[in-house]
Image 1 (cartoon, rainbow, N blue to C red):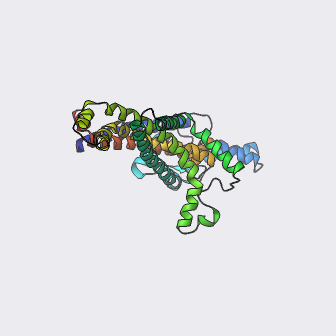
Image 2 (image 1 turned 120 degrees about the vertical axis):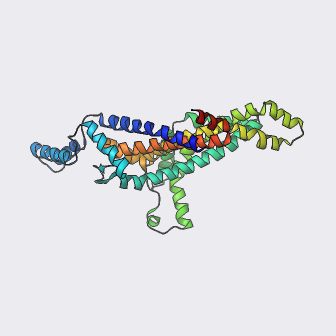
Image 3 (image 1 turned 180 degrees about the vertical axis):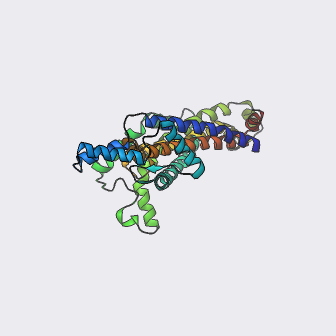
Length: 336
């Protein structure tokens, strides 16, 4: 098992390095840099002359290494991450990128993890219920919900809910985790309730799509397993139907769900990011969009790299869990 895990981790490192190179190159591809933003602000806001604004921009490029060739800038950035865990300096926030990540990424990860657990638990449960009541009105209703969850874009659902909250329910506190009176208050039950009141749209929308997929996959695979010969044998032996389903059928139907978990958490992350952009929550989404708008390459590249790392780690964890459930997987990994 240790050899299997080592193989998966080592094989993921080159992928992560390649993703970092592609990400940095693509974000640097558009013309211009943050020094152009400084030049524009100097002219439009400070009333500086063209020559003075250009001098400020040139000085900024020289001070922050923006005149260096792209390969050298990438090498300095990735070397700083590997050797010192230094993601560079944010042009827009004017502080280390690691501080911006530490401020926003944990909130995004926590919300995505909550959505992931809800989507998995509820989706599997509903999938079992639908499969054991095939072609009933319950199965039809759950299938319709699954269809909606997999087809409605999350940003569109976020816009609809935002419209209803603001214009129909007259809710004014949008874009924050807490009301003003709770923002600096110590944790209490009232503060937790206030947090739920602010983040429920994000949790609901991000959970909805994952729940629909989990339910659909669980239903389809459980129906296949229920028609297997060993399940019929268990029934012929006189086992109760509940025992046949939960002890024999469900564990074998869970394998595709476990494999899906490798991309489920990143799926929840992207869902949280999309919804957070609409609701302007102080998480990764708005920061990533803002960084790309002003060419803050180190913030944008670092956030994308962290999300890619989550995707890779999620796949490794899914492989490990699947190897624990099915010895054939880890034996195949050792053979490789």
